[in-house]
Image (cartoon, rainbow, N blue to C red; front, side):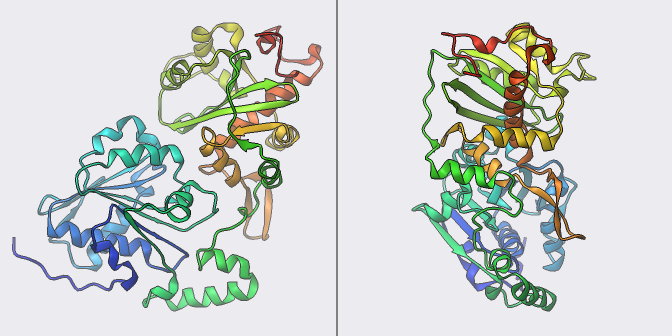
Amino acid sequence: MNPVKVVADFPEKLGFLFEPHRYKVAYGGRGGAKSWGFARALLILGMQKPLRILCARETQKSIADSVHKLLGDQIEALGLGGRYTVLKHTIIGSNGTEFIFAGIKQNVSNMKSYEGCDIAWVEEAASVSKNSWNVLIPTIRKDGSEIWVSYNPELESDETHQRFVIHPPAVGKVVKISWRDNPWVPGVLLQEMKELKERDEASYEHVYEGSCKQTVDGAIYRNELLAAEREGRLTRVPYDPIHPVHTFWDLGFGDNTSIWFAQSMPFEFRILEHISASLQPLQYYVKQLQERPYAYGTHWLPHDGKAHELGTGRSIEEQLKSIFGAGNVRCTPRLSVVDGIAATRAIFGRCWFDKEKCADGIQSLRHYRYERDENLGAFKREPLHDWASHDADAFRTLAVAIKELQRPEESRSKTPEYSPWQRAGGAGWMT
């Protein structure tokens, strides 16, 4: 096929995308043309030679969550319809270039299938977890392969910002880009920026200048996490084999399932580990538990663990009891979210978190926030349901379980009639 000349507007500051680097990272505020600049660069490179390009993000429930439409729009804007065919779930170049789209968290067990990719573009990467980066990076290992990262920062403590900005890789190019680097920024956006700066300069700095926040707006456990940091409770937490490990779940039916692992010690709770995955069968999580060296006590499920699945006709509680024993699996009572949050705040000051093994869960707790009512300009009583919710809900299961055991025995849930938490040397959860 004859070479094609493409005339395209392109931010000068993103010129490094056409240079060879293992990591190519652009971060900053809105209006910097990061997303469409990355899309245009990939389309141009994909015409020069056949490339296999993975377009990834932390979670992708459908193709609508991906950059599929953005790439399709840029193909049309650049007049490249003769060079690319936009299909429902992929985009194919006439020379064999292929764009594929995936959520990292949903594809952890299938990531090996992407090892032949030339480029992985991770868009909206601010929320990508430590575990997801640890899975993706070694997967993209073809000679000369590259990992492209674009995002608007949230918190300085977020894994992506720590990994690429605070501690930048030696074999990469990291660039902060803002609306000032975009000569084509729309006038309506300039007016919105001006009004926001006059009204709320701190919000302007975050939204348009790409500055990190101390905490997210409406952060539910803001004070509790600040205290945990100040008091050194985000640290290395060793496993004590004398005491049982209890697990606390949030069940995602077709969504994320999250589990915290914890031990009870005199006057403190040791939060040893956290895991989370998406679109995995129950057996996946059972295997995760069985592969760990822990001696388990009770596996605590939320109240909906009693709900029967259409496929099996059995509840998650029943299935886990058949594996771990009837006395080792319990469901917490139904408690309002508001009361569950209050219970969590009540025990937070006694929690010590393993900073490494709980990194993704801690990141979610930092981002767990109240939903904002834009019409009233105030926060609602209910939390926002987003990527951080499942880990926070699982941690709430921990607090509700403790609250259940604090109730008078005659008013507790009657199944089982004893608490397996009182095992292994007599050190129970409520010690």
